[in-house]
Image (cartoon, rainbow, N blue to C red; front, top):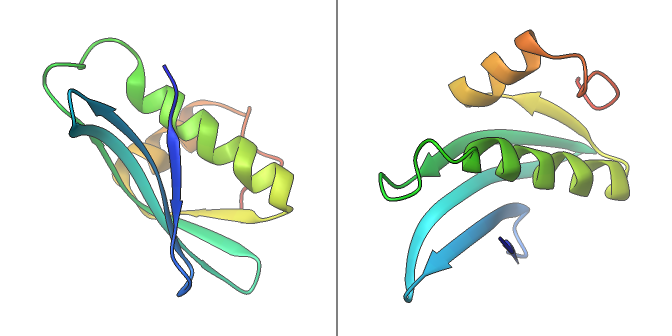
Length: 93
């Protein structure tokens, strides 16, 4: 599964996954002052139960590490993932 990075000039970004020309999964954020606020995670019913949300979060986390950003968890999925695991401790705000 390969995610496409989509960044705008106003600091918003997303990793997206398309299937048959339709966006079926995404994680979105806004960047400001070295902080990446992840505000939304979406996975279509056709992909549910396959760990896609975790893969999206891992992709975003790796992006944050590469860009030397900290992550502010706003999205409920990311908040929960941060609480359940210490694998993201290095990028948490």
